[in-house]
Image (cartoon, rainbow, N blue to C red; front, side, top):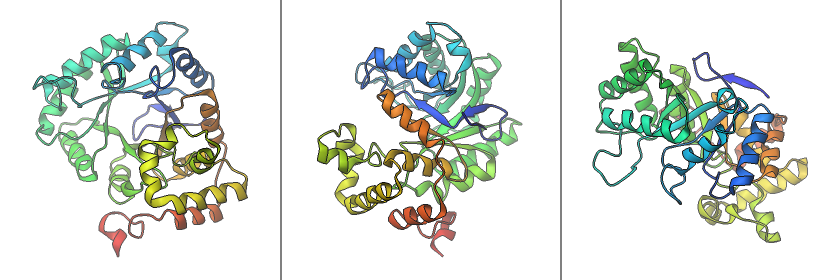
Length: 327
């Protein structure tokens, strides 16, 4: 397994981060525990979850499920860098959402109870809260850090200017600030290249790319649909994208066939090859999908293939940062 430093921190994480959105929900309990053990056995030391995950059953379910896996012992908790999130609505109560100091601190305590652990390695702000001043957010994070409940702070789905604002406020407090930003990033969805990636590189923030296959769009969706084997890739984000991008996706699958590389392997390898990307957040539902993700770590797309991919799925503007991308 290859490891990278998480942003400018000294924390080392695997280049694959196991996202847990499917665990215990789309994958049953037995298969989910098998996936977690398989990840650990292959050196994946990075887990990502959120307090709302598992909402199909009840909010907090996924954290509880991970707690059951940690409880099996064998150093499972100690070997994993654990990230969870705060910010989305946990109930209809007025103070059960957002990034107020009250909600940040109470959510952390609730996550710790559900996970059955004493600390969270990466406590991520799930989305920007325009009503929460950074003085309040950092005050809450300072409290949790001093109490030993969190080690690092991350963000998720933040615009570039908000990352810059967060870091400037943290610097004035002589604090480390945000060490990672988790954004959707894949061949089709490249908007973070304009503002978010440049901001992260400027401030030493690692990027965690979620949905690297765009919900299964780049997992061979057309072939699977034709064979009748498509599951997740035949619905949701992938199905919506197919309405307007089916020609490009077909050309992508043809390219994969010509080069002898699985679609999911090539798409994931492309994400991992992008400058500034620390890790890709994968969401396997089976051991076969986990093995495919592991194969992507060993594949390096050549320049000719990278050029072909840029032709099929162009960068925003001309690919430069901010407004420079349009000049």
